[in-house]
Length: 126
Image (tube, rainbow, N blue to C red; front, side):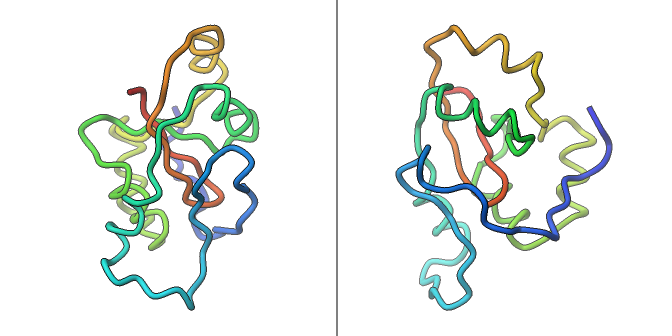
């Protein structure tokens, strides 16, 4: 695991709804009546590994420890809170999914809770 945080300063939309029915795309004109956490909670869904696998190959898939809420991590990324993201990466609460991790899920019928905070995809096994 690298101690370097992902470059969250370049949140450029590049993941589309091809894999998820609901996707977060940065849009400063969209009002957030419930705030960032509420908005992100509405975009969290359950998907099979086959939907996540393409994102692992692009290096944009991250595993979130069950002790954290996906929307909290997503909010830190969308708000460019690099210090918090670095802390989670260092502690292992946020881990970039590598090939060794992907190999264990490829042939299994596992489901994952997932959240897209473009260009990153956050997940954890259900």
